Length: 138
Image (cartoon, rainbow, N blue to C red; front, side):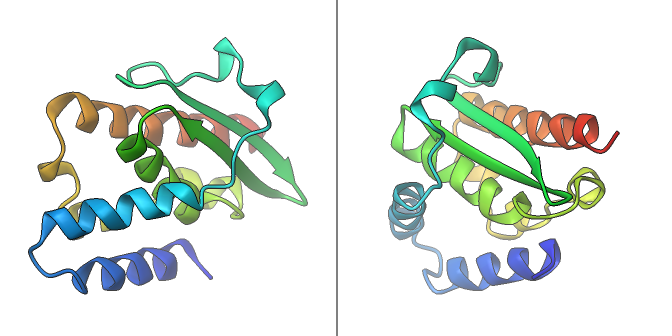
């Protein structure tokens, strides 16, 4: 699936919940539980995403020409947010990750339903994933 197809799938998933942000948060928490977790040995200071209120670890590696992300977070909503990003951006060529516009975030209304610090954290996660993709594309 392309990044855009995965985004469309996520938008459709969140539409099921209508305007109920309580249900959407529950779904986000469930997504966090299915996150491909980072190896405990990789939970190092250099893998912590700066700008997140919670501790979020991200590992990025190139496997067969595609970037593969694993992550973890110490807060359940944040873990769900990074799980969404990993789902959308992992297993794609680095160039596609760098160019991804991630419209699904606005489409599902995520950013507007986050506290300012969580919204900043989301932006930090996106920036780190794209920066890593750019570095791995060289």
